[in-house]
Image 1 (cartoon, protein in one colour):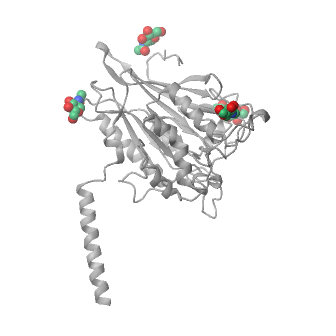
Image 2 (image 1 turned 90 degrees about the horizontal axis):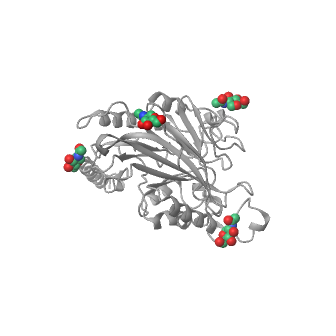
Length: 390
Ligand SMILES: *[C@@H]1O[C@H](CO)[C@@H](O)[C@H](O)[C@H]1NC(C)=O
Ligand SMILES: *[C@@H]1O[C@H](CO)[C@@H](O)[C@H](O)[C@H]1NC(C)=O
Ligand SMILES: *[C@@H]1O[C@H](CO)[C@@H](O)[C@H](O)[C@H]1NC(C)=O
Ligand SMILES: *[C@@H]1O[C@H](CO)[C@@H](O)[C@H](O)[C@H]1NC(C)=O
């Protein structure tokens, strides 16, 4: 028996070694990323639609929260779906980003069905999309790991459970990076000129002395810092070595404590109508981001009726504003989505170059899908002449 077990153990460890050896030779294809390279369009733009806090439940039977009395009767999760289809059709983004609380787990009978229905308009659009988790997604039938394992298998998603090189040390599920390459046939077609970071900001801390909402941990900040430095080395390397660092954007669910710096008066655009419900202590990610310097703006959800952007030490902190109808909101204050457009410089002879500016606005779920709060978040132009056009 013991002998038999030893043989089996030996066999298993052999199998493990062979498997690990094979994995080294053939790195797991970094999901669809290699098959679907993201790049700037021939119009020199890359557009991202952020959908924050859908709070999807079970579809037609799940009622809306915080709508006007006369809207109550004919309002369900299907209104969230309809809004998404409309805003995708109107904006035609290059990427759709779901920043968590995609489903409201405690009301969703079946996490798989709820997720599938929540993401359906994005999937149908055939536009690449990604998702991270909020603090409510795991309250149904799947764990956070189970949810990310399911999400990465859905059509057209570029989401990853975790980066292969960091999977053994990073906290959470749904930390990854996407590289947006220069315009096809331009000199930067093989360079990542814009780097997107997606992070799992967790749900609730399980540490006895740190009760409350979760935070971006040391391991995640380490991965961010390493990744950002590696991307800069590639950006600076031959062929076509570029100066400095390509700009980046970071997306996650729970706001950093620094979001508290702004109110409706001193935010650059948008409003504060509730507190910032971040972790009770500061894990230092803001400092890590500012020190590294590549990320120009952070985009979060979580506090549905805040939708401002504010600039602190050169870094923009932006809320998406609540999107979903089964989420708490404010009756009469329209559900909304945030759009970000990044433009590249047009160089001599009409050739496209590196990133020139990062702009944003919001779309409201009203009859006209009104565009509000257009602003320039960042520009590298010498005289700052970029105007906040739509
Ligand atoms: C929800 O959708 C229904 C059906 O299209 C529509 O009549 C209703 O006005 C929508 N409610 C809101 C709050 O948008
Ligand atoms: C980009 O990579 C492709 C494929 O490896 C190559 O054919 C092309 O010449 C490269 N272009 C530039 C501008 O580096
Ligand atoms: C905004 O105003 C509040 C209240 O006066 C203040 O505490 C905060 O520091 C201000 N923020 C900025 C960025 O000026
Ligand atoms: C500076 O601004 C002017 C318009 O005011 C514009 O024509 C010019 O292209 C700008 N230069 C740069 C380097 O952005």
